[in-house]
Picture (cartoon, rainbow over the protein chains, first blue to last red):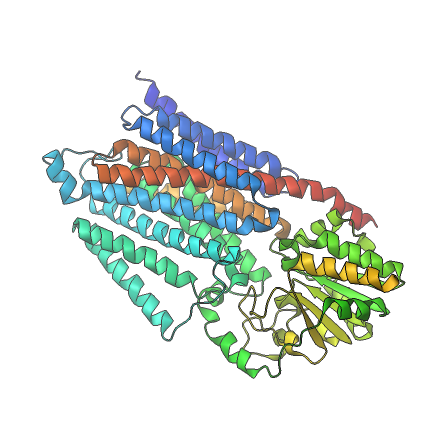
Length: 476
Length: 102
């Protein structure tokens, strides 16, 4: 079996090659689907090769864990709704970070005093290397730190996007406390890398690393989450590469590094598309929105579905502004049904789409097209903005930041400078919204307090359904 | 096996590769690409398998097991999600060209 190690090495090489080619193909819409298949083949090769490694123990446990992990993730990935994709990416990314941290933990604990006494000396081998050098320890520690931050941070990002964590978690001197936690974690890491391999220290190091990931992510608003997830994606890639160095596994080093670099660039591109810098996303908006919120006078004024339906039924021009919330509520079919009913009554209806509507660029157009909305009724921001002053009713469904006038008027607002749909210029604005909260981005919206704005509280789908029903009763 | 400087060279070249591949990507593909690269670092599964394969004490085995579980989730979940998303982008393409031709 002298050929086996070479075959395994060749498999790792092929896997790395397929990953790079796959990623290359994924960066063009024409070849994207083939790209993921290529990368998938590479992954399969690498996993099979690893199972064939001669010095691997616990094979039964490995197989069991792989089977459980794969089937659970496969099942959840298959059934998740398209609109929930970003948080699933966050979840799977967090898992990768956690796995990288776990590798670091196993290696470090393996090196630690306990294992040495258990094995009666320094005869143990870990990842094919004998006694750990400082370099190896440092890489394991660094990979574990980054992986752990990515793990707990991604879980928070997942929880926020899933709507389990609506509030932004902010307290005074937060940045200083966060930095202190990170500094202590790094200090412990340095001590571990210098050979202080005691179990309590390792445990404390991991606890603080995880804590820092939590605390770093908690204050960031939901709208910035895609950028944060992309950043953690790059983090996980880097952590994987570092642990790859520790384990002397070339496929991990190359795949992890490629993802780390690509993820960093992707993060920058995304932040740019959202008119933000990465530093601004991570540290910038603390408290700023709180100050802005206090400046908004007045109250949100509710409206009943019946009144809203009447208002639009007798309007001349209605512009519907759909946002991510509409997609979440799967309300696009009902909204289109309502729009058709309005058109049948002679109302001129248009849909206005903001460039960053939805979580995926281009996503909103697809959703509306699938619901049957013709293209000539869908208008871009530049085309529709001049029309708002002559619009009788602007119906905002599930959109928030992209219609927030604070982006124009309040330099303290985190979204200041972002181009918006000038919905507030319409004669009347009706906002369909689940509740009174600040919503996804955690930013107060001055539109909701405007004199010409009325709030129709309720789930997007239910509200659209009510509007359709009320419109029908008008005719009978 | 891999000495320090060789490792640094690999790191440098791989980093440039990743950067160059992504450098000219249309905005519309940002999310699937993030998901795709998320799948690729699922290679961490291989490392977790090696770590579990070398684990001795029951504590190490427990953490290694968790690592393999998480790594497998990363790889499988990342693949499924990316594939589904890219499928959607394929179906959306005729729509986009339709719009442009109008």
